[in-house]
Length: 297
Image (cartoon, rainbow, N blue to C red):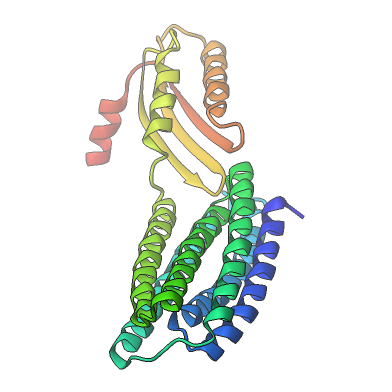
């Protein structure tokens, strides 16, 4: 079993434990913030289970139907995860506004504070582990999961602070106020997850810094006169690069091919932890203007 799959299983187990303790105390205390956190943990469990499925599918090799593999399932999973997080954020916002309008006191404060403190410690430990896996595997699903649980760390911390304030001041409206703040932050983080997933699904170019590194590698090769049609995209942990290299028309095909291989090797060294699929077209002269004209017609 791969490390990223193990990470989703550990996240699922953690979410289950948090659901049980938060839901129990949330119902007893009547705290909208704790109940919101419990609902968020339920969504965490669903998302972690879905992430396991997504990772399992994305790791399947390319075949006759899916020539480039199924790596984009990870981006699709990120979009779905972000959408679910947004929905949970809106629900928390609704509950917080409802409680602020209707009023009500939070009870079982001592138990609530203890539960949220335990939840905070557990979630911090999970985030540290997920960050380690994300850094080691560069898996987008795990990155999204890590970001999601980071929002849980902040929300759990915020809820804990609000409960302590209620306990010390008796200002019960703080529970609803903290619920509003948490919901807005959750929705913002979900937007970032969705945005990254959509960019990959739409074949957005690699990060500008990486693209510039690729350009510099090509420009530093003396035998290459110029290049054009540089295109890049990403799918899971695979980077795709397409480019036309322009050589002198007197160079042999063998020499040009050898230089192309050399450039491919250098590009792949930009990130050794990811897979690079590089397609280089060898041109004896710059034919970009001809191709551009044909495309217009």
